[in-house]
Image 1: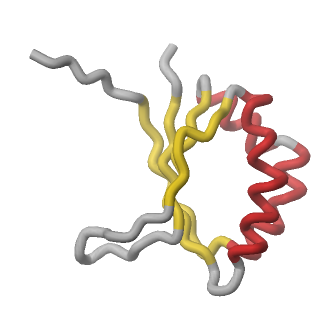
Image 2: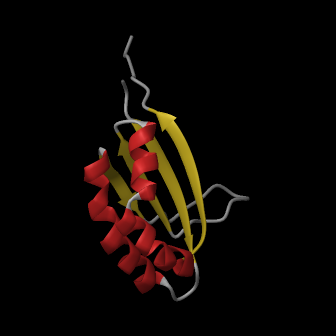
Length: 104
């Protein structure tokens, strides 16, 4: 079974970065319990014309869809949800599976 990947485009509410960091501090440590991990997090500095530049992009992966669903229902993550809601204006989730590049 291949891992499930999530690219998350995060648009923060103005002035709420500290609130979002507080959410991450509570929720991120819970990932591993459900087979999840942070693959990469970055602040983009360019976007194609016509698209709004997100404040951050997170790439997460889970062993399977059930792990992601269980993570979202974790009591600690649920308790921190108010911090997420107070700081995130929009989050766009792109879900997929990894491709394997084979050189000819």
